[in-house]
Length: 278
Length: 278
Image (cartoon, rainbow over all chains, first blue to last red; front, side):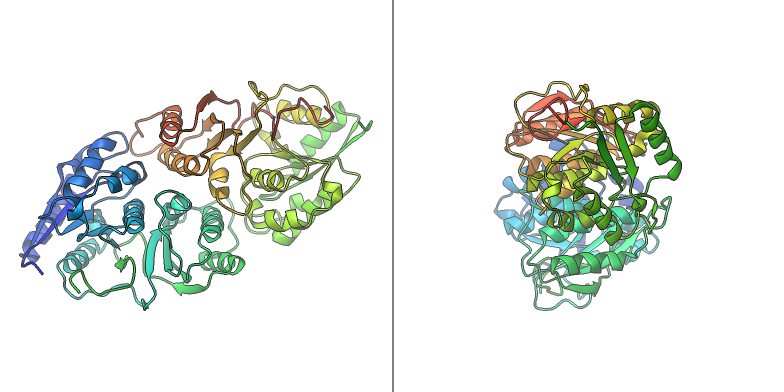
């Protein structure tokens, strides 16, 4: 392991606010003297919804991923946008990308999926730099920085010899059956969702369980910030997950400690290892 | 053609309010003496989000679809729920269902898709009975009643010898790659959406264009009631549609006159014919 871990943040979807990036940089500087952390300028660009147009986001990702001096690419924000650049991003990767860790979740799960499908690098579900804004967010940032510098960090509990992958439910649903979707046969698949009505969660479960037949099982993360509807849905999120797992013959394996919050666990794709260098 | 057209309304998703059903019944009685219209009791049931539990909705659909005295099944409301019952619904259909017209849209598009895949009956995209509540809704109801009784009615414009299908974009996205999805190769596919952010529309277009390679082309209906976001998306809905069509090699064929509104055009699935009895 290098004495120094070099981490570059990029934003494949939405931009990160400057003050939040500064908070992450300050924390890293104060507490992680052996980490060199930087944010690509692209993280602060604005182009409609996005952190720069498709070319800017693609080029920033490729510059970081293909830089042999960079150990890890950390996705700084989610939102939406990775689906527009993931295919050309994979096509543009060079040998230097193969040893890297790529970490994030939510919309950035699209990048993890595409990398995992291509067998490039080490995709890891975990907090975004932008999660620093959340209650407890500094601890989420510390967890990522410790993980990326090769320290022992508590990962998602209950991981075993079976390969695993973790996704935002909507992101996974949009990936199913596309050129970005990895083969998750035999995998334990963890899903979480935020800000979706329970009827939409039910609908997403129909879609993903249809596509995920052959996985080892499904675990349900947090379904957060469910908007109030004009009527109760009539089932809890766990009843929804269990119903669709049962209907599609997918083992339901209980809850997972992932979600759009600071407690969001780190889940390395594939067979779990405790840290980058392990 | 029978002198009398018998139409039964069912609700595979949400219930319809009694006063709206009454308004549709009154209009039919006043203006369509040769139509016998009825609402299944199930339409007024409430079970959480749904118009009765899955069994009630399934049984009401099958009772109407398998009744040899019924000429058409009219989906009275959308919302969400058809995905839970569509597979057993198709499995339970008998010979009596084969000659029938099934009409609706939005969530009910799931039923149309499953019927079209199975080659059973005549699935038709068109206004729901519950659209009576909209501005101009009585005209939407009249259009459906005229169509179902075999009168000449203006259909979606520009239909030609190519087969066609029309869907709510989210509904179509959730159907892609599932056991309910018909083969739309060679079809002109019309899509509309309501109450989704433009970033979600963009994401849905990624998903459906990945799945719809091989269609004859795509036409864009109305993208209505787009919620205000914290920033502009940066593209119009038509730019989104054209972008993803271009990327996936699907011909973009212009706009369509469908949407969650009273002007929502009637679009018979398959090769267009002007009316039920034509």
